Image: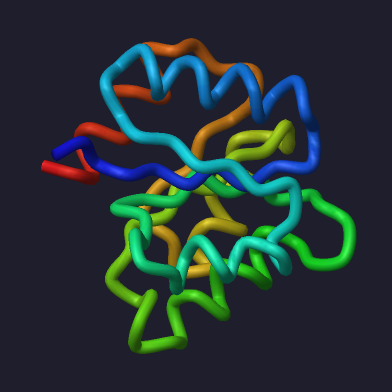
Length: 122
């Protein structure tokens, strides 16, 4: 069975790009354009094995969403990769604050993304 990855980003181009990268690597992919409206996927019948989450989004930041996910028993175990166009050191600080498993600076290659996903799922 394919590992299920949820990608949350408000940028439709980036959402499609990341989704394509993961799909081509053999993962089942779901997408959401907002952290608030992703709960039906996260807590549904087929919860994700991993979440790729953008930092800067309207309504709720990726950092706040990650913190909420890590506080809930049903989602605390799900690995999260926080992604952003912020400077690498700032992103690492945000990732630490949000208690996520890894971070990824935009722009990134398909290889960089897939390597991080595979490392967290192994």
